[in-house]
Image (cartoon, rainbow, N blue to C red):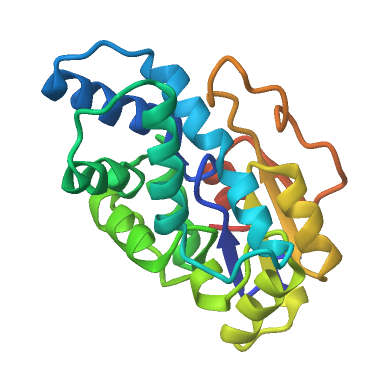
Length: 235
């Protein structure tokens, strides 16, 4: 199988980086600056819960495409209002929104990606916009060959063109590209477009996580983490 694959494209939020801990950390820092005490874990989970509905309005055609930084900021304003946090200036809100640019990688991510990079093209296939992905990669040491994803291809996952346009940009057939993620639905959508698939579980996304605890479909690879995926693919 590995001989047919030329590139791996990765979901990032939750799969390569730990979004929840990073958002909680930034929230706590904001709380210290403002002198307020909030349930920042609940805040992080609430902010993340607005992610899919915001993108769905674009997928459904109810809104033109805007990059994820815009959606994140709108959702942040909603969460600040919900939690009664009103001490941030517009610049302060902008700065808080950059929390998504500063997420930490899971412990295996950098080594696993580096090993895969020795043999394959590795790219993001995230709903995150280019600036977000680049800033995150520079801070976390993520060794991507190229940044792909929603802003680049003009579609939010799991729309088929988000996967197919990424393959086209790499000059590869869908069957030569493997989508790697910790999200079953993401991989099912990619598989329906003809891509190969690799699942690795991330079971540390908070006490409310009830899905994606294990592979639920017959994916091409099921790994324990990205290092194990690299090993399975001969890296």
